[in-house]
Every structure is written in C-alpha cells, then in structure tokens.
Image (cartoon, rainbow, N blue to C red; front, side):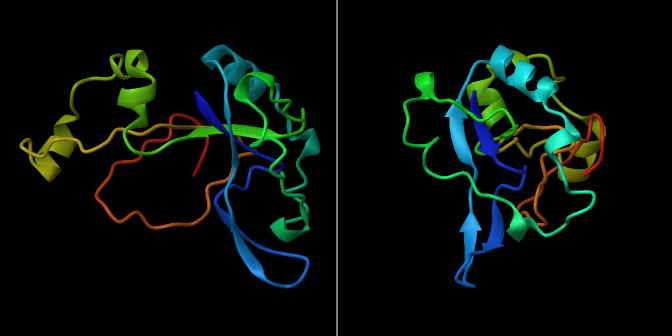
Length: 152
C-alpha cells in the first residue's frame, strides 16, 4: 500500500510558515504491506495527540523530505507519526483488488438515485483512526461516502 504519513494527522492542509506565508502541505508517502499498516494503525494512540487542547495546527511540526527521499524498503517512520490510507483514482480496484471483491457489485438505492446505466468512475478507500484528519473540502463530482466506524 501507499500510505500517507504526517507528524500530526493533518495532511493536505494549509499551514502558516515561520515567515508568515501560507503553504499547502501534503503528507509524506510510504510503501508498506497491509499487515505493517494495520499494525502501525492499531499501535497509534492519542498519547501524542494534543488536538483536544491545542487546535492550532500551525504550532505542530511538519515532516520533512527525510521520509520521501529514502527508498521505501528502508524508510524509518517516527513512532509518533500518524499513518492513514487515502488514495484516489480508483485505488480500491487498482491497489487492493482482493478487498474490492468483498464488496457487493452495486448499491440498489444509489443505482436508483444515479441511474443503473451510470458506471462507477472510481472506487476509493480511506482508512485512518481518530488521529487522522481530513480537511474541509468539496468534491467536484458525485460520490457516496460511508463511515464504518467513528465520524467525519
């Protein structure tokens, strides 16, 4: 899997830099097995997370290119980093096809609303825990969103 890694769970967000300018920050990306991702995700705790008392994301450190510049097999991700899976462009069918096969071929009420002749352009998956944060955004296409556990 190509997994997103941040120091605080805030990827794809605007940060105020030390010079006062604003910059759009993307998460570092790291290749890991599904088992490694699951183990790391389950091992994350809120012990390093000060979100509940400090809502200023600009005061938090940003991972540098040190992760991105190292070959995937030898990357050392800091233990306190937040990992989450957030791919686009049909990731479920392309990157995890065996998992995609576990889903039903269609959703009756969605087909009724969108029309059965409307093929799926993409099937994406987002997996994270309470430390991973999705910034407020607007998708420019029709989509369905399902939360298996937790909240968005």
